Length: 150
Image (cartoon, rainbow, N blue to C red; front, side, top):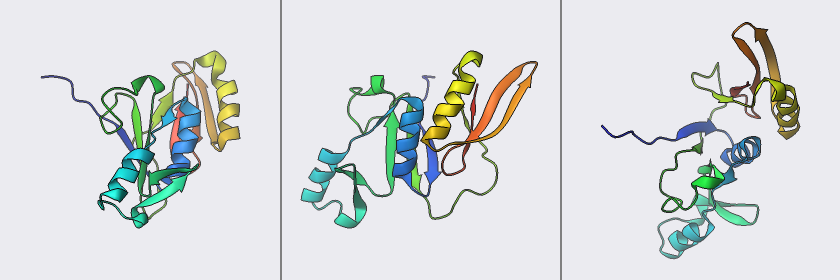
């Protein structure tokens, strides 16, 4: 069997703000759908209610994605990329602990520096673990989704 591609999808109250945070946190690029959306509007496949403007570009109101900068040119924005996060709008806020979270692997010597940088972007530090076999800081993104810096 061939490997199956996937993306990680994250529910969000504000997918565009989450994409902004995570693109800066990971050094990823927010996918630009402006031309594609304009074509869909011209063809009547979407309406003004389906889109919004973000940083002067048209974007889908209910979802947006980020991907590793090296993954552009893999056949177009609509094609799956090996390193992609999709943020989709949901009406409710996060409740309870995540069942899945991201680990940002920066190396033990860079944890403090990364925690400071991520806090400046809007994350919050939850707690630190420094014990045999595990050194990491658990954080929360601007919407409260937990992730670790290790």
